[in-house]
Structure formats: structure tokens, C-alpha cells
Length: 129
Image 1 (cartoon, rainbow, N blue to C red):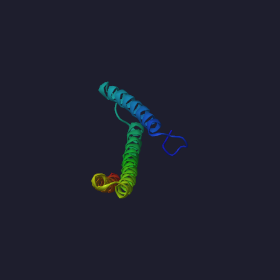
Image 2: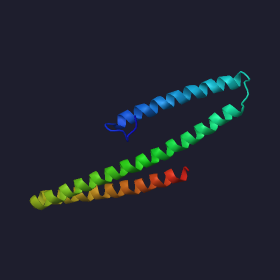
Image 3: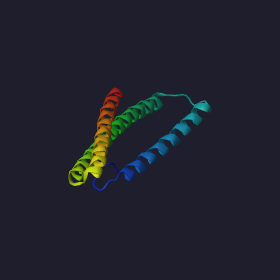
Image 4: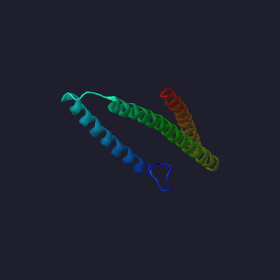
């Protein structure tokens, strides 16, 4: 299951990634044992290694894109929270209004940090390729 499938959750996607990682670790353990026993590399093992490297790179790129999306989601949530605090500040009395304005500023700053992190993740994902 991937996050693009209907009904997929981050937990589902994590479980799929975890199972793939366990499978790959088992394959690597077996290959190490083969090499330790003197079984040489050949065209087939070299091709499998090349394909695994390509798959690994694609997973890394996808992880960076997914991280960037989660940062953008978090930034939007902070902006929504800032808007709620600003509305509360307008409705609140003098003392509470200032606390809500401070909270709104905090949320806007957090949103900016998430936006910057999203850009960084996108950039790192592009550098991976």
C-alpha cells in the first residue's frame, strides 16, 4: 500500500516501507554470506545491485518529497491556528487579546519555519538524483 492508494494512512505506508527494508536487509545478509563463502560477483549480481541502487535513490527522493509535503501541511495548520488566535484576539478583552496576538505570531513564525524546511527537503530530494 502506498499513500496514493485510497484509504492509505501514513501508518500503512510506514508498514510497507518497513517490510521492504526487512526484505532488503535479508537479501543483503544472504549476499554477504555468499561473498564470504567465496561465491564471486557475476553479471546477474551486478545487475541486481544496480537495480537496488536505483530503487534506493527513488525511495530517497520520494521520502524527501513526502517530508516536504508534511512540512507544507504543518505550515498550513499553523497559519490556520494563527487566524483563529487573531479572531480570538479581536473578540477578547484587552488582557487576553494580547496573549492571542502573541500566540498568532508564534504560529506564523512556526509556519515560516515549516515552509523553509519544505524548500530544503525539496532541494535535498533533487540533489539525491
